[in-house]
Length: 193
Image (tube, rainbow, N blue to C red; front, side, top):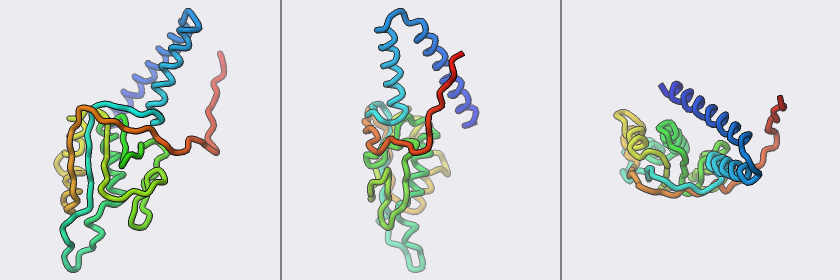
């Protein structure tokens, strides 16, 4: 089902690109062309995560368990790990999030969430609990994606991790502040027909 939704979204985006190309070709003046290019640039900046965004969504705070482990239990089971954050981020994106941040770090295509001793690195910045995840999208859909029976929140609370989830009418997610350079990837130029 997720594949079908993704394919439909891809097809809509292709149609939008074709429409924008037609509009650009039909523009009557330089001012129209500049306006269309500026609108497209603004959309691209949002998609790339390099502009601050605002909208409805959810706020999820994830903290280590305050319940002491019992003799013989691994205490690492009761702390937030990088994989827990990755699962939350993936789940909200799968539920339709348009922008996500963790402790103020914007999640983009090049974001790394890794364990570094007793801290977690996000975009190369050290983070420690509590972790505040913000996601912009339809609040009910995002909440439903996280709260489904046997889903992610059930699993996190099973290990007594502290989870606080709220829906928000408006949240702000900052722009990505890390490096934007690529060493190996180069854009492919299309040949004119």
